[in-house]
Every structure is written in structure tokens, then in C-alpha cells.
Length: 110
Length: 258
Image 1 (cartoon, each protein chain N blue to C red):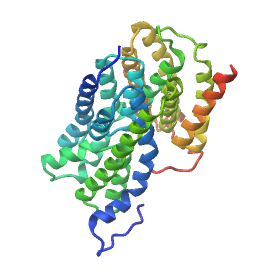
Image 2: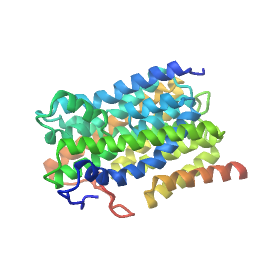
Image 3: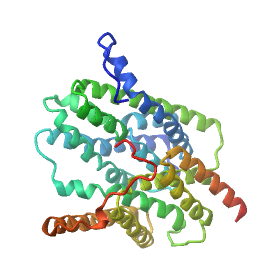
């Protein structure tokens, strides 16, 4: 399905709402009260779970939503490379560029 | 950037601009990349401009680009965004003690332009510089927002002038997410949560046959992480035994700014 500009616009507006809510409401309420601790601890694990799931979808899941470790082989190998580069350099730009170079070369070789 | 001392003769906005400059510059390449990717996902320049201005979150904008290229339904995209943005509840509330007494509108504009990176700078300034006021903080936010939005618009224009291979562009997103995962990993428990996320994501994605599986695996994996964390904390309180799982890693590249 191809989205048109108006649908993109509505996506922007809805994104604005869900982006503003979590930033604004706690700031408004917790200017005087304290945020519950359990919520803090839970939220700590959201980004890592979310990003890992996204990567899994990109490298292990096919368009028909089946598991496959073979369709995206260059991406899987390049991912390991990206993890190592980002661990040692901590540079976002370097990790992405190295990853792109790796996936480009690997698609060519494999 | 923290060592900048306020020069009494210099207008405030120039001082604040100088403080925000390192952050602003670091936004340029990411903003350009984001603009290019959004363009590849079908966003026109006006919508990219609005998205950068209104949402102002690298992670969220990359997520939208990624979900659009895999033609996820609107509801799934918005739900995923909501979970991603939920963590700002943490950031916002940890700044709240410095913003007491501000009115409704200030709080609204302040939170609308709040972001991971400008939060880090503001938190540092608030906790180290007694003269740092909420007004300076919001100015710093607006400088970073300005640079972010311009870079996105330029990226979008560049993207529409070039033809870019979509599969390669898509891996740029995967690489970005991988980078963010590595940045998130600060203890063995986080590594463990990442590993169970792999299995849960495969399970839920093949089960639901849709991107909603991402929402399910995110919720379940983070909740498991939270339960283990709570259990380990409780045990530590009772027995004084600190589990290796929640011990913080040493950073191999030295300590980054927190």
C-alpha cells in the first residue's frame, strides 16, 4: 500500500500527540510529586527491547513473516560487524558507514 | 561545553548558542541521514519538516521511516512510537525539580522540544551551573531543534535529488538501531534482555504475521527485564549480595557524557 501526502500528514499529527504526551504530562504532574520507582525501572528496559525487536525483524524475518536465517545473510554478518564497531568506537556515524560498506561488499561476494 | 563561563557583557542568547553548538553540530549528519531516509520512505519535504519540528526525536523518525518502508499499518506505527517515546516520561520527570513554578505554556513548549541529547546537556547545566535558568534551558532546546529541523529539510531535498538503493538505505536503519542497542547495554541484565528480545520478537512476529508482534515482544521483554531487576534489587536489600547481572560495565572507549 502506498501512502499519500495527506496520510503522511495525519501520521505526523498522531506522532506529535504520542510524542508530546509522555514528555509533557509527567513534567506537568511530577513538578510536585515523585514519579513511581517501578515505572522508572520498567522504562529502563523499553529502548533495548524495542530496538532489538526491530533489528530481528530486519534480519531474521521474511516479507511473509516467517523466520529465516538465510534470506538476509549479508545483513546478519554485517550486523555483527556493526555491533563490534559501535562497541569499540561508540561513534554513530562510523558504525552506520561501516555497516553500509559491509552490507554492500557482502551482497556482492555472497 | 560545561566550562563556558557567562560573560556579563555578552547577550544571553549568544552564550546559550555557544553552549548548544557542540550538540547542534552533532545533529547535522544525523538530521541529514534522517531526512534522506524519510524521503526514501515516501515523505515529502513539508511533512519531513513538520515531523522534525513536532516530534523532534531521531529514534522516532528513524522508526517511522523503517516502518513505512515495510508498509506497517498506521496504528502499529503510532503504538510503537508511543512505547518508544514513553521513556521521555523519565527524562521529563527528572528535570521537573528544576522547573517548579513555571506556568502551563512554558511547560508545554519545554516538553515539546525536549529530546535525549538536549536533556543531557540541560541536566548537566542545571546540576552544575547555579545560574542556569529554565529560560536558558528552553533556548538551548530551541537551538538544537532549529539545527535538527534544517538538517532534516536539507536531507529531504538531497534525497529527492538522488536515487538511492532502498535495500542499502534500509540497512542504514538496522545499523542505527544496532548502534542504539550497544549504547543501551550497560549491564549483563541488558544483554540478557536483548537476547530474550530476539527470541520473543521471532516468536511474536511469526505468530501475529504483522508488525504488531514488535509491540508484543517489546512489552514482554521489557517486563521480564523489569521483574528480574526488581527481584535482584530486593535480594540485594535483604542479603547485601550484589548480583553481577546488574553491575554496570566499564566503557571500553572511556566514559561518554551522561
